[in-house]
Image: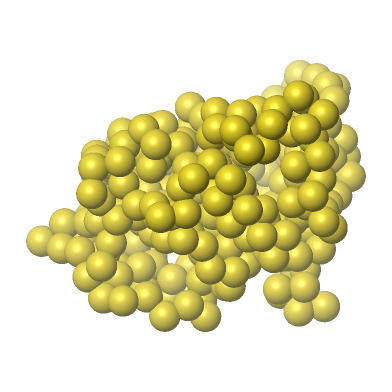
Length: 271
């Protein structure tokens, strides 16, 4: 199975857009009057949810008129929040076809297609114009990117001088591959799991030309406490094409076993 096939199998149920629209109508929401706020119960399904979405915007100084590159745009939830609350425009790249289709449809329904554009492709295959974006966002995306160093160089070229790149991600630890459990939120098997250590990510960013603004790396730590049993599948059950209960349980077990660290970072291109 190719990389794109594996990504499409893991992310996005078949007919995802129709499933989402049916879910909304079952909630009594009229699609003709759909608002972006009607979507936040499920479109902020990345780690940290809305709190993380807002942190990324504030940490990069997002504001009116700025152009944002969203690498791994999902179903467009982060882009819609950034455009609505901060007045920017967004170009989103998303390799999972079901996610991309849903992102385009939902964005159209809330009347934001003039502010947000999506392309369904792997960021490695997309030609990005030089010196074009004020901000680039990687929202829990790096774990699916094999050539991290190459992508950072590519994004560096696409940013305007002084532009910022922001990251939220899970990171590898010395214990990561000792019995790592699948499925996890970003991969059903090792073929699309490209966890990197925070140290290697930092080195790749510096090598690409970036300098630090914010760097918050949390190492993985073992815990003797039994992780709580995941309660219910939402919102992942609506969106993801995997065993959601197993995914959440494995994520908690991998974390408590010290196999996962975390990273929040903002770096800047030279002026």
